[in-house]
Every structure is written in structure tokens, then in C-alpha cells.
Image 1: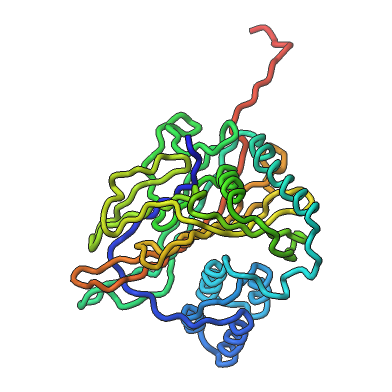
Image 2: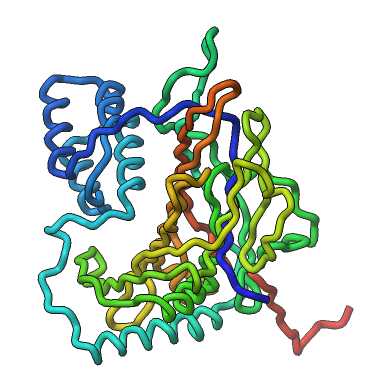
Amino acid sequence: MRKTILFAILMAMALPCRAAMHPVTVQQLHETLAAQRAANKSDGDIAQQLNSLELTEQLTQPALDRISVEFKPGPKTVLSLKLLADSSAFLEPLAGELLAKAPPIAAEQRAMMKSFINFVAVTQHHMPDFLATRLTDSYDNTPESVTHSGWAPHTDLHPAGTFSHHIVYRNGEEVLDRQSDSSGAKPKNEPTPMGLVSFGEFGPALGVILTDASKGILKWSHWEQTAAGPVAVFHYEVPQAASHYTVNYCCVRGSQNSAGAVGLYGMDASNASLDGSDSYHGTPSYHGNLYLDPATGAVLRVTVESDLKPSNPIMRAATSVQYGPVEIGGKSYICPVHSIAISLTKSHAKGDMSDREILRINEVSFTDYHRFGSTSRILTDVPPQ
């Protein structure tokens, strides 16, 4: 079976355009917060001001932590800052967070990639069977209310639901289409988040990227300084001819009902339901970065961004997955801990042929890792009954 990364996009009814955003640097964001505080603005007013901004560089976790310590923002501002950070995850970091260190020589780069290949092909496939929880917080810019004249003209990004699903990892791979859970009971029809949903973070996605990138461009990018130490960053670009990054998007023009096809890693994506003027199905070229531990080759982060055309009904599909050490059965393993999935789509309102943009962000936390299995004990000295 051909291995692919397949993304399912579910689309809701036609919605309003996004408002024009004001591009700012992280330093300008800091100045905006300082000015708002000096003017004694309320938490809601500050959040509203931030919602009109769009960062031109990455708001990394260390920078976000410094802002939180200095300004002690209220809950609405905290949410706006988090969404700004999520939206900037695919941009270059601050110059001050780039490590001023000479690039590794060619032999050292090859050694890092060899260790990364071993991590993907061997280390991840020798993890024990386990269960985990995938907790998704969804955000979008869809209207929260309807006026007497129709939909509100614009709304900022806001919470659109929280979704929890179980993950089963067995025999070296994530079980995506399981028939029952650990208790043997049939799984319930659980609601799923709208927008971009990714699968394959537990190994297959990394393997696909590595295979595809070998037919495209894979090169050294830069060093980054993190709380865990130096990180080696490699950039890759995959041409469409080598791409196994599959984007499935389906919607119904002017419909108030969401429609789509559930897409899973490794699934044949020849769905008849994807026919229609507002549907997209393809394997576009894509690019991104691999963030590696230079000592072990373990992946610390990976980004994937499709090269979609502005004329497509879906204009953006991008994911960023953060990896870190988790304990399973008393041992430490490198597993996904956090991810961000961003989609930008367009639709049409009834009687209105203008394009309407819908931005959705799905923020995922991978939690509650525990070993999947049973234990037994043999009693050698059983007292008589």
C-alpha cells in the first residue's frame, strides 16, 4: 500500500471575508502592548487590538514567555497572543534566537541525517504498544451570531470547540481505523474538528517526508538556540512529481451543512464525494523544516507547508509538530507533544460570487501516554483451598 500523508478538510457554510491585517515584527508587538498598558486599556481592548495584527516573524515560546512575564496579560490577551504565535509558527525566528555558530561541515551534516534516518526507521518502530489522548482546541473566524440582515461582516479568531480522541499505537504503527478500543467495545461516533486534521505523526509522516525529500532538495539551514540546547535545522523542498502529501478538501457551495471525506494516512484517496466545483484533491509540492537533536538525530520539530495556488478552493494547508520526551511504561521515548494545523479556504455565499476566506487553526496536545498491554504473575506457593 502506497504510504501517503492524507489530510481531511471539512468545510462549513459560506462565511465572510477576513479583515485586512496589519503586519508587525515581534518588537512592534512588544511596543503595541507597552502602549496599550500605558493607556490603561482593558484586557478586551488589548485583545481586540492584537487581533488586527499579523506577525512577520516567528513568535517563539521563549519570546512569548518573556512577554507574559513582563506584561502579565489577561485571559483574552493571552488567547490572542497564543493565536498570533500559532499563526507565526512557519516564519523565520527572531535574529537573536539564531545561534551564531558555524554550519557543520558536510560530513557532520551527513552524520546527523544518518542518525535521523535511524531514528525514523528503527527507534520509532521499537516503541512499545501504547495508548494516548489527542486533545484538539479549534479556532476559526466564522461568525458567532447572525444579524437581521444576515451574517456579521467579520469576526476575529475565536474558540470553535474542543475535541478529544484516543490514539492506539500497536506493532510499530498508529492504528487509525480501529474497530474497538482497549476494552473491546465499539468506538462511539465522536465529533471531529473542522479544518485541517493530520495523521501519521508517530513515524509514517516522517518517513514519507524523508523519502520525498530525497527526490527533491534537502539542505542545511541554520542553528537555533532553544531551552533544551542547540537545534540543527534542515530545509527541504519536495516537487509535485515526488509528493505523497495528499490534500483532500470538500465542501458544498452555499450549503449550510458541512460535507467532506475523512482522510487517513495510507488510505486510497479516490473518493467520489470529492467531485464538485469547490472541491480539491491532489498531491501538491510542499516544503518545510526538520529540527534535529545534533547529538542523537532525534526529531524535535517538523513543519510541512503545501504549495497550493491562490485559485484553489483551499489556499493553505500547513502543519507544525513538536516532539519531546514522554514516559511510557517507565522508559523515555521521543513522541509528539504538540501540533498546529492551519487551513485557509474560500467559499461563496448564496447569490454572492465573491470569494470568502475561512481561517481555521487546530491546536493539538498529545497527552496521557501509557503502555498498552497486560501483566501476569505466577504464584509458586499457593495455599490449599
